[in-house]
Length: 472
Image 1 (cartoon, rainbow, N blue to C red):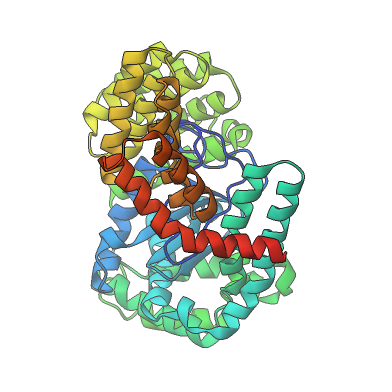
Image 2 (cartoon, rainbow, N blue to C red):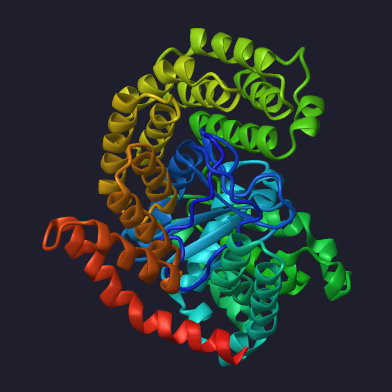
């Protein structure tokens, strides 16, 4: 994870299933820090996490499943939700959400891929989009979240209120994901077929469900959220097992590399999400790479940067070409007020992985934070390169607005803020800042025309939002 960020992008909200961020702290990497693009760490609610390393591991394992299901893996977004609850879900728009709590409960990649294959079965079956009952079920939490947003704004927390209101659909989606037992059975069978076609064993999904067979006897309120929306039964597990055991790849096993990457992913998540527990689980006598990685992150999260940096330097001596270790080192240095020292490791992370936009955003933030005009201009260029790959990254737009403000370029700053709100789906704010940008920018310049595009697109939605606010 990289520096703490609150990134909600248009791609992430595709299908109208937005994750509400518990906190909006500007930074780099997971939803907590640079290596992990932290979006909403430390808050009480769910957070949407971005982390290049974890996203790569998940896609490397899951992309074969997406391909045999008929999807281009580049079009499937895996949403990593920072929540200790065991849960996973599928939304319209080719999005699969996985809670960090579920990942930490899996013992190997095959179990996790079994869950993803099952969710791909829901996606392929169109289950999230077809049920009017599910949509009705989602209205109550959605309206409640919107109401909380209004209260927050009335209390003076305008930005937090806006985020709650714009992300109310996330809670509506979760409330609506009560799949029927018939749909569960179909997703099971489809997932089993996808795993076999991808050359993977289906044993993992059976084992995963079997580990939680006891949830069947719990009341609905006491079950994990996953088994509230995905009703489990012994009959369902046994039926799935009978199919899986007959498949040719039933005895296929995870490769040593897959197992190692799974442990690294879990160690990283544990260090960021549960730092105190990570220091208990990954004891000092454990000198394995995942254990030292988890401890380095945990010390950093527990505000002991010197301990963290010593561990990171030791890991770098072992893996001198690991971009994520340089990312983490830069993140620690930046967040503890040492941006000049953070620059070199951030540059190294980008040099080792130039195609990763989140790493460039981290470097851009570091350069902008150094208080030097030339560095700020270079930081803007790094952000622009990142936005060429992820033009809907709202954090990059916010950082760019801050940089232009420092440089005294008011028109560019307001345009960047308009872009940020545009990709957050906040039409009124996008419209307002785009109009202000037009006042500062030269007419008929590319920037003025872009501001005009935002005005034209946002104005109808802004009027609608304003009308709703007046009626409320």
